[in-house]
Image 1 (tube, rainbow, N blue to C red):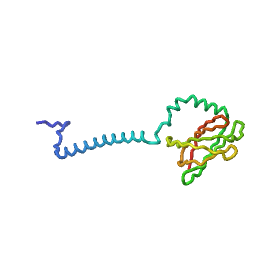
Image 2: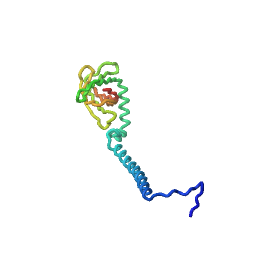
Image 3: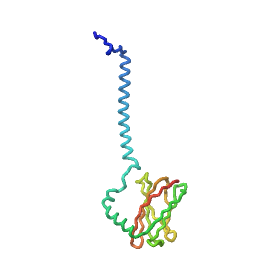
Amino acid sequence: MTLAHPYNPAPPPVDPRVARRAVITWTSIILGLLIMQILLCFVGVYCATKGKSTVVEADYYNKALHWDEKKALLRASQDLGWSVALDVGAIATTSGDRALMLTLKDKSGAPITDATVNVAYFHHARPLDLRQSDLKATANGLYASSLPLDRRGLWEFRLTIRHNGQTFIETLTQDLLQ
């Protein structure tokens, strides 16, 4: 027989059915939380590997190998002194197309005509959705096209311009508000 002490009283009697229900309840809660944690880890891994938004630059290894050449081309583009102004239409058509206009000028400010203008573009939220288009000369130093810019937000435009054996590259970012 155990003597009860005022600081350590004897535990009250427990009904075995209540004790069994408590064990089942707390075991279920603990196992449920563990299973939920494992499922959340699987969902996180799936989202990180399958989403179009969480990606690395396409063909990044090849770009890294040719970084010196790209840097030399950027330096040569700056030495050319050409300037570009990109204007994206504020209103999109029902299919999401917008007018894209590029003004191209040389070092002295004179318009450059008869150039070949290529633009690679993507929305920052979808970098794997890289699209390309050639802009057509419409006026003296003005090149334009209608492009499917169907999302609001930041768009990156990578321009490659060739004229008289010279190549000019530039990357521009535009925030489309509508």
